[in-house]
Length: 203
Image 1 (cartoon, helix red, strand yellow):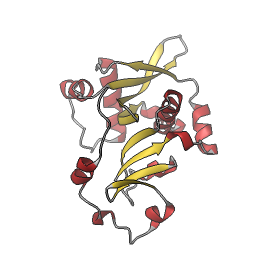
Image 2: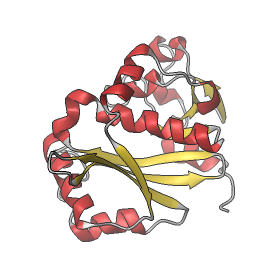
Image 3: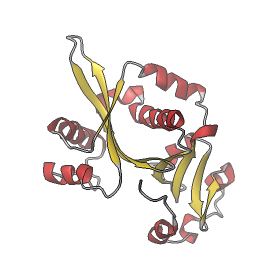
C-alpha cells in the first residue's frame, strides 16, 4: 500500500529529536537532477554494505544516471554534506526526490554506511518532513508500506501516516499493523493501486 506522512500534524518523538540532534552537523543542498561521480561512488558504497543482494546491485554509472536524470516530473537531488577535519565538504547522503503539487515524494535515498549508528536514513526522512512543513506542502510520500515486511515497518514510525487502501487514503492504525485478519494479499495488486491514485498535475 502506498504511504504518505501528513506533515502538518507530524511531531517528532523523543528518539527522532535525538536523531535530528545527532546529525545537526549535516548541511543540506538542493540540486537539479544531475548524476555525478561523487553520487555514484556513495551509491555503490551504500549498496555494497547495505543491499548487496538487492535489485540495484550491479547498476553501472549509465543506469544510475538514467535513474537520476530521466524523470517525467520535477525532481531534485537533496544532498547532505559534512565538513571534514581539514575543512572539506564531504558528501554523506543523498536522496532523489520528486516535487509534487501537494508534497515531496522520496524516490530513493542512500548514505555513507559508516554513519549507520547515527540513523542517517531516518534523518533524511525527518528532514524531508521539515522541508515539506517549511514549504507548506501537506504530504511526504514514502513509497509502499507492507504489513509484516521488516524492510518497510519503519515507515509506521512517522505518524500520522496514511496508506492507500480500498481506493482511498486511510490513516495507518495499530489495528492495520497488527491485525492478522487484515491480509495485504486481500488488497488490489500494487499496479492497480498505483493506477487508482490521482496525482496532482505537473506545474
